Length: 87
Image 1 (cartoon, rainbow, N blue to C red):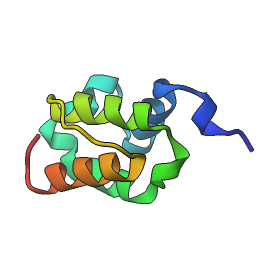
Image 2: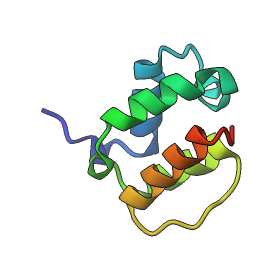
Image 3: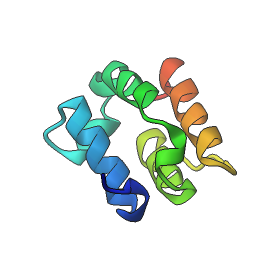
Image 4: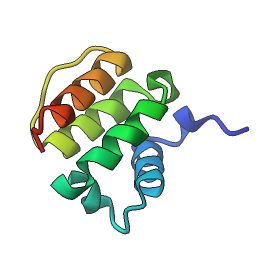
């Protein structure tokens, strides 16, 4: 079993792209992918990826920088923003 924490930021982005059925990475930031992104993120444990990977995802998906200190906080913030329709 591979340790995804060693794959770098591309690991989290690639996993989300694959699990969401997106053709392109840019699809993840599309409002049409919001509900599937929420479902996929709910299944990923925050400790699987580093804080840097989560911050990169947060900045990319939400298109803004929100300070977070832990992977758990980053994941929670992304989900909260997606659920309130911030995409």
